[in-house]
Amino acid sequence: MLVLPFLKITIFELVGAPSERIFADEWNPCRSNSWAKHHSSNSKNFSSVAMRASYSSMKSSSGLYEKSKSVWIWTENKEVLTASVERGWNTFVFSSRHRQLAHEWSSIALISPLYVEEGEIFDSESKRVATIFEVSNPQELQQLQPAMGHAENVVIDLLDWQVIPAENIVAAFQGHQTKVFAISKNHSEAQVFLEALEHGLGGVILKVEDAEDVLQLKDYFDRRNEVNNLLSLTKATVIRVQVAGMGDRVCVDLCCLMRPGEGLLVGSFARGLFLVHSECLESNYIASRPFRVNAGPVHTYVAIPGGKTCYLSELKSGKEVIVVDQKGQQRTAIVGRVKIETRPLILVEAKRDSDDLDQHLYSILLQNAETVALVCPHQGNGLQKTAIPVTSLKVGDEVMLRVQGGARHTGIEIEEFIVEN
Image 1 (cartoon, helix red, strand yellow):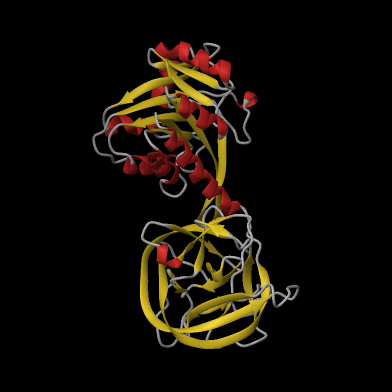
Image 2 (cartoon, one colour):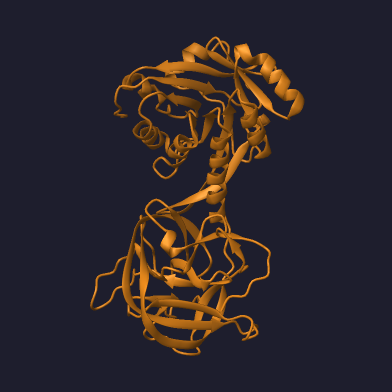
């Protein structure tokens, strides 16, 4: 039973033919009990024309969650058209009075136009793609419940509340073949719909007149796509451990919990970032804090989404970082709080076996405390320690390192001559 506040919603019912689908996953024809009578005489199949942005962005208790997401664009702005097509989103929705605009755009770009006319949506061959329904109360919204043995493809236009209705719809349709879309008026709304209850809706129709919303939504997909890519980590051998003086170190508290073997990539030089373990491990003197990484002094680089870095001093609530484990698996996490306090530091230097000592030295300063540790190489036998506290670290120990380009401009890797010591 869906329990929602009073809201007004426009519903689009999408009908697709599995035999004509152009996507990797199924696009099934379907009917709910409440709509079957209305459409039994005039339903038609069509080849779905949605361009799809696929990503695998979240982990549930059962493992990595993967799902394709659809993006359609509804706009009258040519800059939005250009930005969308350049990013692979080719399906555009037009009102019936803008058919000439659709014709003009089709002559300059390869797009798939859809038209809204008299409460229905048609493709360029005048085949009905969607029927529009308006829902003005929670009781009518309950008709979106998937019927047993059926699969529905619907698009909802939430005109009032967004988060709670989207979550309720995701919960109601979870485990069913139904694919649910939502119209969003900006990239932030789109992200809400795509992340509702972790799994999110099946896609969005981005109805905007500002190209920046397209750029931001594509950036969101790109960051989520990074989760599929394993980061290349390498072993480095510790060659020096030395107690240093006092410094302002940064504790990064995230809005998620980390598991043993996970942490943040940080380092004094961007060319080599150490995997610093979270405080998720139990100890005798202090409770575990699985949301925290004691990451080093304020000058230290930290890896963030998009292959970029920033200084620890630049982190603040709401910013994203990447959490990485021993195997290089990564995920994005939101910073909830940053604490900067003066503490005693310890210097750690390391190198790879293949590196020239004079040219490829990697360094990090960390708080000199038992709860601060560097992640060890993964052995796979269950006997190897996950991390070594810096207070126990000694020359010859192996730790995990991320080697990359050292030259940076505002956190973006660039090609230039640079010397850092």
